[in-house]
Image (cartoon, rainbow, N blue to C red; front, side, top):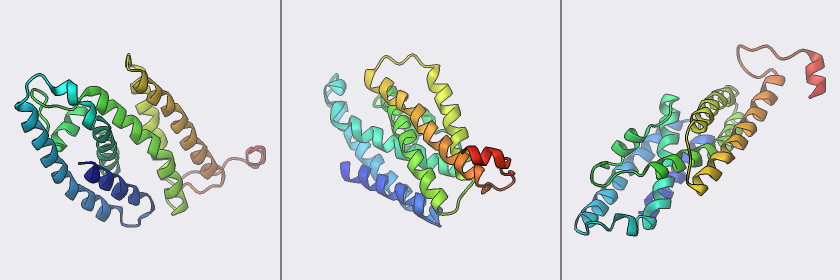
Length: 198
């Protein structure tokens, strides 16, 4: 299970520097079926051990959070939207009534995705995709606003949410740098005095 999660992580990170990101996403999708099988086996084991879910939940928690992060990243690349909790469960073949995706694991995975986005933006700009910072900045702005409405009781999750504002700030810096240089299509560079101040 751990190997599959790490492989998915590596493959989706390749998208950042790849010309043909769609091909890499398709390769990553092939591993999702393997992950479904792992979760299916896990569900069968837990079904035979009623009441033991939370006793062993920690054994797969971090891998699940990493998988959610990469699934959310792939979903964003394809749709430009956030992967919601029910969609993540469906992709992994999980059933909320028997063996579902814990809300905190889902939210933590989304925070992990946020942590990866500044590096993705830098890599895309290096590859000549100057519109990427604006798209990611808008997405992170909305995501951060949505998280602010939550009452987060989990200390680790709250810390991960706090780091999201720094992710957003880093992406904003890249966006403004690209904008100042006049590299964004359809947007005029700022006046010379603004460039001088930068």
